[in-house]
Image (tube, rainbow, N blue to C red; front, top):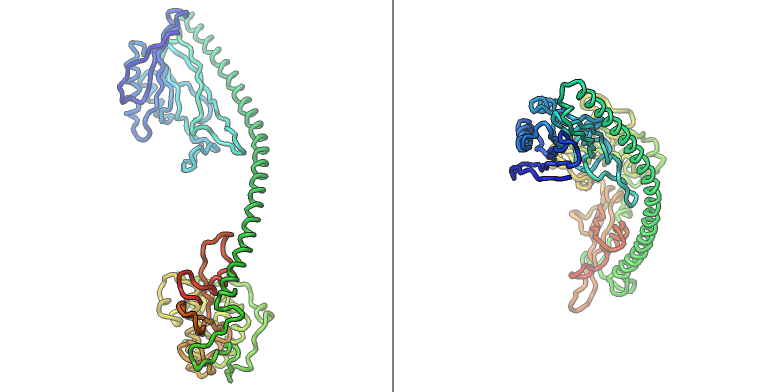
Length: 480
């Protein structure tokens, strides 16, 4: 066997070689084989021109040429090329690219049945039969995958002048040899199919074993990580308790702190404040809220913050008890936010109506809570909650439904039922870091506990962790 490289343009996306079999008859000795990778896209004429350039360099062997490779051409285009260049295609069953289940490129968006991008074209004095190969998947460490986004194409080629002859004897020879090629192709295709099936079965059995081993390794690693995480969380909690309430902290048992304001008196809890009009109000029970049906609310624009808050508040016993009594005695139903909440509760009980009544009252009248909620923008639910409580508090103070609440940092020394339901006193302790003298306390009224998560060993911080962390002295600042 002799071979000689065919000189092509450097820019040509192909390689070609002249093959000569010295022991074969003269008519079967020489053939030109070219491997191509033609450009993709709407450039059919360019693809044909590239193939014509290869054939033109065959040295007078245009009828004994075999063109193989990724031609990026669909069936109708190949028919046109074959007719124009007097070539024949060795057709095969199936598709060589884009086959379902290949998944070589994860980002591929093609979802069709597959394409015959890889082709085998041959001249008049050649015959070829082809079929797909290497369609099986590779298996490694419990995973299966294809080695390429293309499947291979195997071609069986026979060269002879009899394929172009019109003589009766030559036609008979050509027919017999074509039949031999067809039988060879079918035999090898069956072997390929059996080989792929056997490798798939063996690979999946190995994959199951590999996955089990990997799962065992992962399980051991996960258990170890869980144990390390649990140990880190215990150590973290102990450290936070020590920093907040240990001997060096300002909240340690032996530390005496004096109120810094209001004559040295500490405030009482807001639940201890007496409000004459509400002292007989029941705290409510879960039995009261059990009758609230599980019914959704229609969202208007970006009002999910108001809808979600309404669902929570009408299922909070103390809030529902207060809203019910409040609505019965309030004369400003259309401007009161607590009344809007009760009306939303009534909608959930009886069902939403049509038109304007289809929307939850509190969400529809959200601008009454604050003007910032009047538009269609999205807002934070806690921001809406705090503004709702502040609006309700001011409404109660104006209606003289409040009690004196001294010794606490608040805009007005009064506690309403808002503070009795949701409020608490937050104590902040300070001490001079230079003289380490008297410890002083400041007391503020809060309705929302604000804590800050941090990235720490042992996994995400719990609410208890964040609370303890907030009680500890800040790093680089004065102790709290």
